[in-house]
Image (cartoon, rainbow, N blue to C red):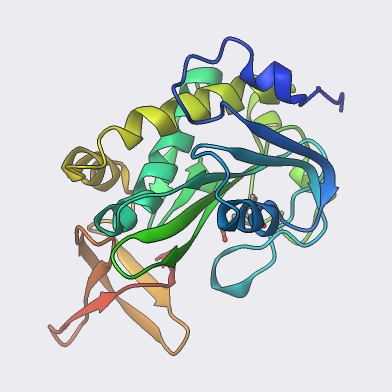
Length: 258
Ligand code: BTN
């Protein structure tokens, strides 16, 4: 598949944002954009700075998993310095920004799976990882990591074949990654302006979740639970109704629809 260019100027020129994506640090190859973003955040780089890589050698996912980001994918991290009260909404914000930008640029329909997977036709096309460091009264920084499968054939990667898809696989053609990135950055900034309230972000995220009302299996770090995914709370946790009538609040885990 053809390789499109990801130069910082192609991303930033004419980008109508105030701060998100106004500075882009581009690396052909690095360990993980999260590592560089953390280093830059600790140094106090401008809010909204984006670290983007053509290729990550040790991309990481949630729950200590590795994240495959071959050439043709989007792997980026956005640095924010939010108030502590905004932190629960960042995962929702990122999932919404990714879903909206994929839909606007490709016309494909996406679904969200709790907590923050973006799916197309039931298969994962985008993953989100939020890492934060919290100070005494305010978040020192938050890094939103977003990985999108764009221009590669998932069939070339047997380890993800059953669960993942890419935009190129869905569309039958490549798509300029820059278009998705620019839209994504604009969506992130627009949603950031809703952070002080949080409610519109929570409501749209909740509405888009395909998980709710469904029979699910949830894997946490300590247990495997089954039940009905009854609801999600404003802090992002999942409320699971189990067969014995009890309700369990799950903060982190992985859901399989049954
Ligand atoms: C998940 O679904 O488990 C989250 C995947 C997050 C992947 C992105 S790619 C850019 C950033 N850098 C990383 O190492 N991880 C995130």
